[in-house]
Image (cartoon, rainbow, N blue to C red; front, side, top):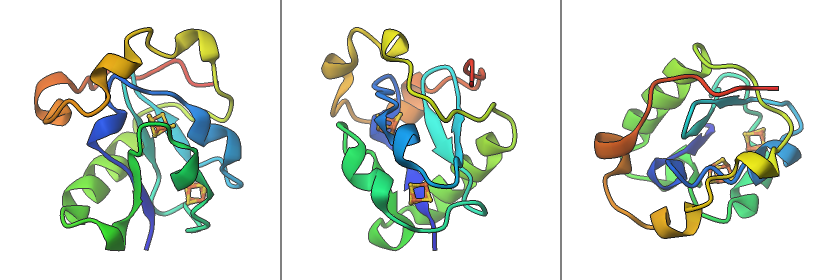
Length: 115
Ligand code: SF4
Ligand code: F3S
């Protein structure tokens, strides 16, 4: 089991999640964060921290295989992030909250800054 970052994080990217992870297993893309499923210890603390409700346990979502693949792939490509940067939270994050199909239409493969 692991926790996964899913669609609604894209272009919301609040980063509250990274502050609470005891094993620092978040990785940063330009407009999305992912969890490394092999490093996550399933503590569940991050789930409640996300203002966008974008984090789920893999056994709680129907498309877990899809999101596990994405989280694993990009956690190996992107830099680690352990500290939130409030100045880099998108100014229009609220407008993107709940927009459907963000992965298909708005996902960026570019890495973020990391720590
Ligand atoms: Fe980190 Fe715990 Fe969230 Fe896993 S469930 S990413 S260990 S805070
Ligand atoms: Fe994304 Fe939520 Fe973290 S929007 S960056 S998963 S706090």
